[in-house]
Length: 171
Image (cartoon, rainbow, N blue to C red):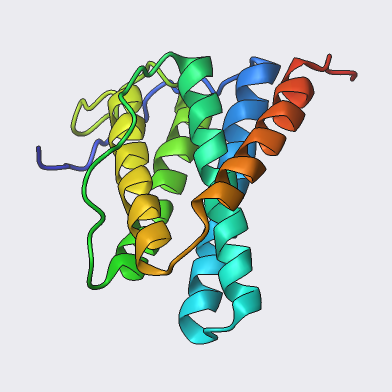
């Protein structure tokens, strides 16, 4: 659907639920850190940068699971074939798109719609996360990252973040 300029602003209501803000805010942070690690890996192909990329991919995948659980997106796990070629460029682009979709959900609400296209924010986020997952799998395969190390970090991160998400907000 083509986007058009909407002359009147939509009455957006930013998310005010503290737990949802924690879940989506942390997700945006991890997406941004993964962008940085992916760019560093492209420019400096060292073991340290590969290790950093591996850790950040694990963090993003862990946070995808937490966003899925919190927002009940209910998509199946990606088991597709890892893509080759410019996988890192696609990963970086998909991370950027997911940052935009997540930010829109924070400022406008997950269940609202993009004003010029009518696309639900939940649908945009779902599609953006699907692309991120696909290119994370491609990067794991194409850059010989350690799936066991990624799983171990995801398990650790999940426990830590689950406890953090459940903490009470003190104003």
